[in-house]
Image (cartoon, rainbow, N blue to C red; front, side, top):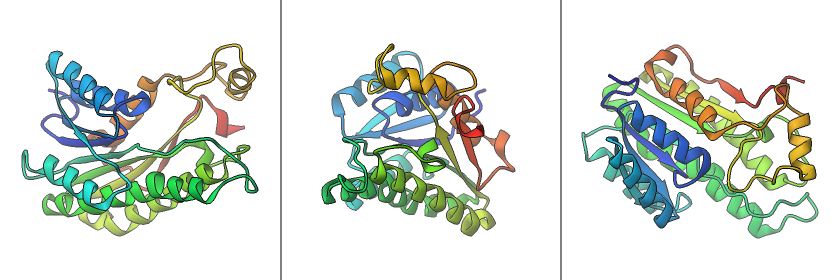
Length: 249
């Protein structure tokens, strides 16, 4: 029996990187996983690979920035067993980072709509299903940039900091329904958009960690699994840094 045995889990931004690792690990721990992303090709491929390995996963293409698509995606997941047990809001807009003078209105709007309001929309749709069973876990993937400063990323950083506040507020309001809401704050993690080894940014990322290395998506997924599982039954409103010590300086 896995740590998420028979639970229904939704993971947004699940086609690549951290989201994909979370979806894969949730499925390994016996959850029925609904993978949400706008990249249908990568999402379907990952879901098929999970099923081939004996897991339960379905891909649902949806833009988290669109309220109707968020509602449809949650309804589809809930239809399997009449419930939603776990929601992992991982989707975010990265784009090209700028400082406060360089960030365009489009960059600001997209960052807020996807990173912050995307989490709000999926949370709004999932909460009634969780309240019916007086049980649920929501895991919001923020970033260490929601906790500490970083250069040339004002829109992204603002959206992630907002998601930290959102996490704490929803945890406060819905704890009485036995719904836990927590945040993960990954540091430098090895994904398809990471700087190449040897590049200046890669070297600076390593220098900022106590462990002297870049993290793996699977390491973030392990932390997400803990927060999603009953092992974290007394953990809510928390922000867990998975950053090799970056924010402990």
